[in-house]
Length: 452
Image 1: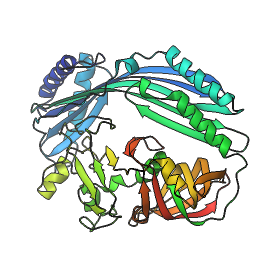
Image 2: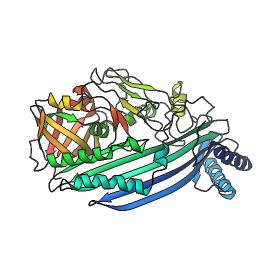
Image 3: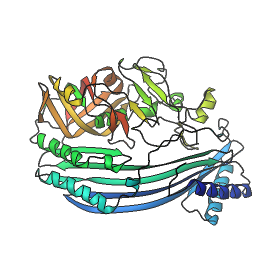
Image 4: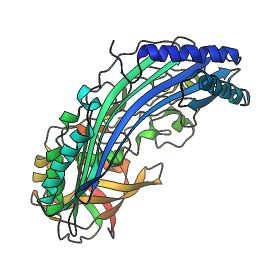
């Protein structure tokens, strides 16, 4: 089986053997360890020039001991014997200081995990020169439009493993390249972003041209009256907005009554065409196929034909509910429980250009920011548009417009969807990427024009 040069499978096993020895010496034979490493590099540019290139390598060892329905965790970034003994002793001391938790499950048992290959050697081998040349080309494209470019180009590789004293050994490694660019003109801006395991899969010149075109077309923005508008959200804007709702697809959140799905599972909340899954094995997704305890991730049908169907269960919450865990738990101890992290929103067949072309009058949104929750049960969110907001008339963008603030229920939004483009890997403000489409919806609630 393939393995990472940063931290091999055998190295993980050797480190965990020392963790186990230290745990037995500390009187804590039940032990779990998360072991990881990363090599992250970032080239940052602004004012049409590269101004920063940074790179770091990191190691971590996070040890959790468990005894008498108590558990606690301690972490170090050193793998020498003394540091391993110290972190295990700290975890054991913290564990003994906890109150017993009657719902705490025993350590996970081994299970088969289907491996996924998301490692690209060219991304792992990318140099500062490689990134600088790509950035220089992107800057030149923006500069030729009389605009100023800013953004980042990052190439990362990472590995993580989870082992425990009951025999669990889950191992995953990957690469990720990410490019983001903002093109700024006198009174307008445009933006584009993409990520992929393979740096060669990023069309960096194309992203630069897209950002520059948005900045050019949105120059001299008009001010429109707020109100209920037909809106077309590009995939990044869909990710920005819908990414706010999936923490609610959690059995723990429902039990705590902090989810909009409380008393609503199995009911039709959204339009019949809305299909949403959590799928760690989807070819456009990323991340490990196991959760924070080494439990294999299961595909979840979160929404089927507009009906909220399934939610994530950690082992702890599954024990409470007398059901099976789904492989979406966060490392213990935690107060959040679990959440789906590999969101796939099923798209349609109409390209974005066709959706725009079929729109008599509406607003095209590139991305959103400063998104905050207003009403957790109706899932009303507020935020602002930015970096390319356009008026559509008779099937084409006719001008840029001043940015809007919105107050919009996600439940209402997903009931008002009129068209979806094919799904793609979308990158936005959210920390995780999502597979999803562009979305056309009626009666989107823009409440005021912003100052930005």
